[in-house]
Image 1 (cartoon, helix red, strand yellow):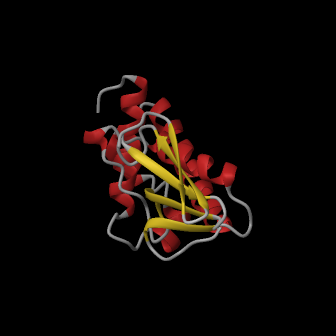
Image 2 (cartoon, one colour; image 1 turned 90 degrees about the vertical axis):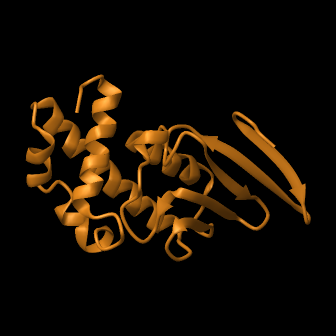
Length: 161
């Protein structure tokens, strides 16, 4: 089944809502919410175990990853169980922390881009340093994540990287 926005299923006395998330991990991500069970599956838009992989070659963007977190947080409550694409079952509070880290890092890198800093200069500024203990030990290393964000933001503004 394909859909462009949202599709709802009724399965096992629950309502399952699948919503497209534009330009997040890729350009084809979906968040699935089981209403009665109060469970959200975010797939690779949420890496509870570290920095996310943003697949720039298939349309992924940092702004899309943050928008996916916003979309999930808009339907979540304090009791919602959140299934990430990578890592252990998470809470709404953990998703909020993740979103905060990504937004902070994105804004730092955006400021560096506005100051015409090159990718090596931005990597050298270590815009992820205060989040690396929590998110920088997985398979996406801080320098890789900075590169994803930098290139994602450059693409969004029409700059060349």
